[in-house]
Length: 308
Ligand code: NAD
Ligand code: UDP
Image (cartoon, rainbow, N blue to C red; front, side):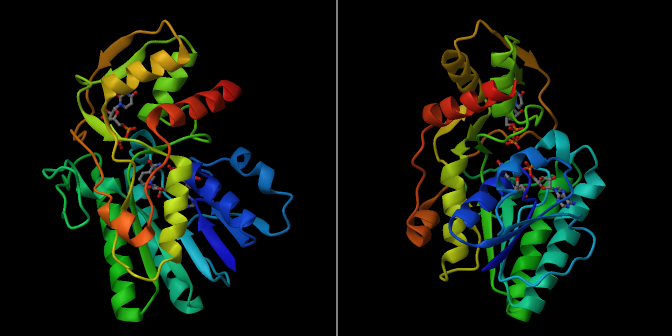
């Protein structure tokens, strides 16, 4: 198959390109390098089945493809809030462009949605049936609402035009190829610990997140694309739930650093808790994460040691 991966030079996109190539597929990687980089896919450049295209998903494009993974969008709050109007355009116009291409070429298409569509959730853990609690006017709305509209578009292209759509709702994922200055908590803590700097806890540090290692996540994404049971969203993440203080202490222990914890202001609308209900992923994909936090952090620490 010929497969388009938008955002293919980013953290998750580059791992998807790699997996697809090793399965014998032909891959077109499209990226505007906002948060992605050529370094992430440099090792794929010699492969004759790999093609790299510098392009913005917001601008129209034409390819002949069998499948599309729409991964293009900055994922770190720091990066998606840098130019919030562009973030919404990337999610919404990018989804329309990808869906139009899928409609014309009869390609199956997968949307990288997010746990952020649940906002600051009032139900815990979050099942796919939960409609969410998003502040439509806040600083995270450009991302949350953009991703919500993208889900709506995927469902409507499926119902109205018969496009073969898939949606994954990704919960916090970490691992090698995150940018050292990505701004998300796992990379921040590891980079700070390795540099001997204090770890920045936003707020009281009692907010929780569930962290999934990238290899587990990519496996679930590929399985979602392959299955033919449902077009409805599937949560993907690791249900292990940790406070930011617990995460920081684990990073300090694994890096053997003398760094301390310091508290900084909690960003506005920061969700208090996050945990995926992965019953559906277990049933439909016969998948559950295999890599626990300590193992995943150890691999990620090794990666950042080679980067810093
Ligand atoms: P990332 O920032 O590393 O990757 C995003 C990629 O998209 C980058 O290569 C970037 O340059 C590219 N991009 C951004 N805007 C673009 C545009 N307008 N045109 C073309 N390319 C563009 O982030 P990631 O963690 O790899 O996330 C990938 C996808 O998964 C995103 O859609 C994100 O919303 C989603 N997601 C990720 C997580 C996570 O924890 N990693 C959680 C939920 C959802
Ligand atoms: N966070 C933190 N210190 C940091 C970066 C983030 O305490 O240096 C907190 C942030 O406030 C949030 C959690 O870690 O509560 C996860 O943040 P991240 O940006 O990784 O992802 P989010 O799930 O909020 O999109």
